[in-house]
Structures are given as C-alpha cells and as structure tokens.
Image (cartoon, rainbow, N blue to C red; front, side, top):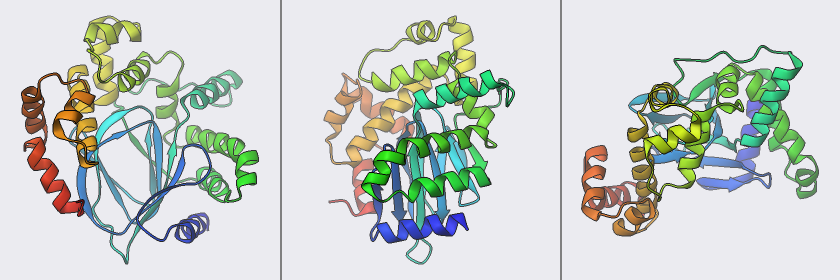
Length: 295
C-alpha cells in the first residue's frame, strides 16, 4: 500500500499544478492535470517516481513512456524533451522528483563494491543516458518514509538518513548496475558532462572534454556516444539549445537566452534552433505561450 500512501501525501500537500519543495534537500512533489506536449528540458541527475498518471521523456529520438509501474533514473545531466501526454483533472500526474546527490551515490557505490555484497557493475555498452526501473519493495518503502517527513524538525534530523536509504535502494534496484556505472569514481564521461553542464557559456572543445575524462579523443567519442546516444558535438549543441528554450519559455528574450548559453551570433543561434526544433525561436516561443497559456 506504499504507492496509495505516497499519493495521499501528495494530494494533501498540493491543491494546484506545479512542483513544491518538501523541506528535504533535492526532494520535490509534483502535480499536473493538463496534457502538455514534450518540450525541451534538461534533466540533472535525478530519479522521477510517479504514483498516478503517466509521463513522457524523449532522449535523442528515443521515447520513454512511464507510469507508476516504473521510475526513471537519470544519472547525469542530459538534454531531453519532456511532457505530460495523459494528464487530466480526472487522471492527474502525481509524483516525486529526487535530485541525486552525486557525492552520496559515488560514496555508496564504493562502499557496495568494498563490502562485496554485490558484484561491481559491468560496463553496459547498451546504456543510453536514462533507464526505467520497476518499483521494488525497498525503493517503495524508502520513498514513503522520505515523503512522510512533513514536520520540519523530523526533516532536519532524519532527512539525510532517509535520503541515504533511498539512494541505496536505487543502487540495489533493477537500474542499480546502470547507476553504479555512472557514479563509479573512474567514470570520466560523467565527470566531463558534469563540468560541461556548469560551463555552457564557455567555449568547449572535444579535446578539452577528452582530456578532462582522461581519454584519447577517439576513445572518448566512442564511450560518450555509448553513454548518451549522441556524439559530443551533438550533446553540447542540444544542451545549449535546450537550456535556451527553457529560458525563453520562462520569459527571457531570444537574444538574451542565446547569450546565456554561449552563442555570440544571434543568426547562428536561430539557424541551429530551427534545425533542431523545426521553427524559429520566436515562433517556438509564441507557440509555447499559446499551448500553455503563458502571457
């Protein structure tokens, strides 16, 4: 009965659509009652668990539809498109967003490997950025105990311990080997992506990214595509354009959004934006505003 209990917690705390902080670092509840198409987004390392309705995430053309039977694991920053295709007032999308603590995930991965309780994760050449994992008892119970902390004192004293429990449950779940590979101390791809996501406005070269990952250019290119399904150049461009689209959707001007993500030439930004999304930034902004009702 864990999922109904989590759903009741969300319904009690949320009377309107959106996301609310829980008082525990990186944990938010969300609610949506309106079907919205996929729009550009950037997922930071996170887990998204749904207890009602369904959600859609697209990574490099690969579509992932998931509901309360699976939770999504995204262990690194990724440019995606996300939407709520089935949300209605009678069938709302309700769930929990957990920002993954990279330090904690790495620490737990090392501890698990050191104890020998589970075998170290073998490389997954088929990994593609995100993974859906079926709910198991450990994950469900850990998430319920985490979301039950609505008292500020309880959250302050017990929050970190219950976050640790949930992170451990994720690493022990069906997507655990995938997540452990991403958070292994020697994962140079994850290290390069983390640096890139914090320096989008800077000039980035493949040689610089490969050096940060501790790999040759050829090896870096191959392993990067295995991990994300995109080449490094495609990834950098998608990250910048998705960040810009998010800023434009929040009301920032097109030119300001372009500069924020490192574009010096507005015409180049417009060309690349249109190539990726099929329309100009201004038309995309107008269409988004009409779809969502944003002024």
